[in-house]
Structure formats: structure tokens, C-alpha cells
Image (cartoon, rainbow, N blue to C red; front, side, top):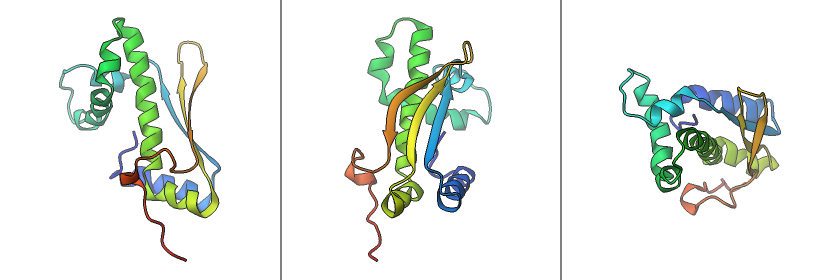
Length: 145
């Protein structure tokens, strides 16, 4: 999960993007994800419920599409995919990624899903290397040089 206030995630991202200057960042979910499955229900688990709430927000955003899928496994698989897509966009909303795009036109941020059942990686065809598709409210003004 890309949670904008998670200092651990942001620290790792900052190191990868600004020190290692990686060219690609991959958000990779997996089918059969227990967190996604838990987010589809209402069972209280414990402290992790607070983390799962971020996944529930993705369900809320895509509720109409997801609830139109009658088969539970197909709905869960699509929810996994939508969650990855939202995490790609959430990475693009960070100042770390936006500053790197402005400075060096990289990294590309990609969304993939891994199938534990057969080992196949599905490219969700969501990839960003600039903020052109991002709503204006999330675009940072870059400092003047």
C-alpha cells in the first residue's frame, strides 16, 4: 500500500529514486491477497484493520464496477487489479516521484499483478513517467531554479 504518511515507505522510495536513481518502480500485487479479501468483508481482525481501511477506500472508489461482478473470485481479482492501479497513482502523487520526473524524467511507475497459482505476471498497462494524467489538485509546483 502506498500510504502518503508512511515514513517507512517514503524513506525507501526516496532512497531508490534519489540515491539509486532507479528507472522503474513496480507496484506488484497478487491474486488471492488476504488484505484485499479482508477489505471486502466486515470482520474485525485487529490492528491490521487500520491498514486494511486504505484498501476499503479503493473499493469505495470502484464500488459500482466491483459490485456489478457477480462471481466472488472474479470480483476479488478485479479488486486486486484496481488496488494496484490506485497505488500506482498514489506513488505519482508523492513529491518524491514528481520531483524526480521534473529533474530527470524518471522513474516510470508500473502496475503489475502476480498470480500465485501459475506464476504469471499480468501487466495492468498502467504506467506513468509524468503528471499529465493527474488531477491538478495533486500536482506540485516545482521550485524555480
